Length: 93
Image 1 (cartoon, rainbow, N blue to C red):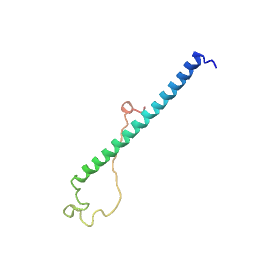
Image 2: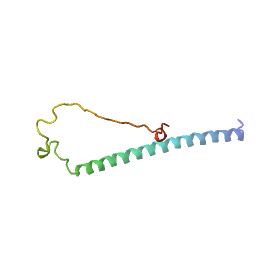
Image 3: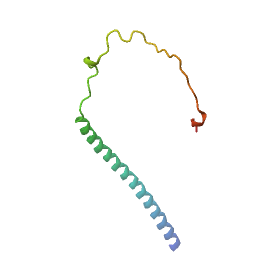
């Protein structure tokens, strides 16, 4: 059985490409894993920050409530409205 050098080189090149592509996939998977771990750590840090935020004001502040008869009607009335459109200041695109 005679083995030609060019056949060995072709096989070697094919094997090198195969290993090179598998290393590329390994690199992508390891970067994705590191990003996932970083997100997990950041989410825990965010929770810790949110635990120490000051609480909001109450929804209803009794001293700032309007009178009980306000508003009596739910409508808006506009009188003497003038509108001017300046085309040179209007940017559409």
